[in-house]
Length: 305
Image 1 (cartoon, rainbow, N blue to C red):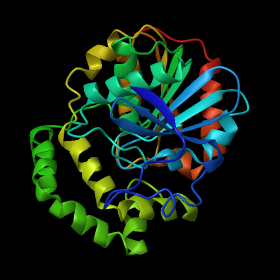
Image 2 (spheres, rainbow, N blue to C red):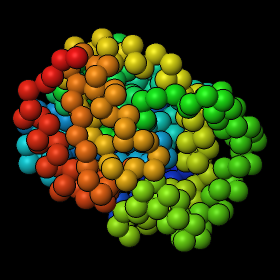
Image 3 (cartoon, one colour):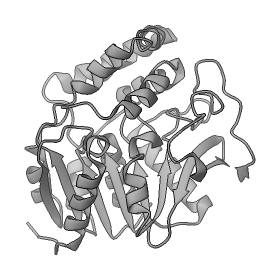
């Protein structure tokens, strides 16, 4: 079953409400709501031209692309989505947000929209989704942009402990409620964002705070962390049939910028570029600068290992 909804589904307790949290959402005029199987999607569309699909990172939403979307829309038909359980996308009952399942439901959405992305831009965990979409032939883009991509499993013991910690935290929703209550303090949200390597503008902080005060959004974020398995991602990179570019903020405190050139060498046709002075949320800090970097790497001929 697939249909476009005339209005977003009613928010359940703990979920972001479109009429409240979304009342002045960035690029709201392009928002659409689609039901595909049992997932109710929030999708934003704008611009004309080749299709560019934007996939946000863990704990974010379409608001993360507020500055970049209008710039891309000059040359692309832009599609930005909220991942299931985050932002205003309602997941199917019992949905497990693993990498494979996430890429599978996105492929179902793209089929419903009858679009095939020419370009996929994934931020942080969204880059892993982009790679898995292409590696499994669920999408066939001409180019992938990894923006501070989280493409490496947790190192050492953390690889095994971190998912377990996330599972423990999601038990009974206790941690999600605690975190949501703590997010009422704006300064705590600012510090959280600053720890990634520099805070974005105040408007982004506003929207993160709204989302993080919603326990369902936080719970889905923790569940995504608990079920994320990147063990096959390097194999995926080696088998990609199109170029991938790794943009890495030099001040990124969440993902080491040294990962970008290493991963570029693993890919069949990979390139790496530094984003000087920018952190993990580079596109929120300097959308024009990131847009210039995207245009630059798309003009470059791909290199082979």
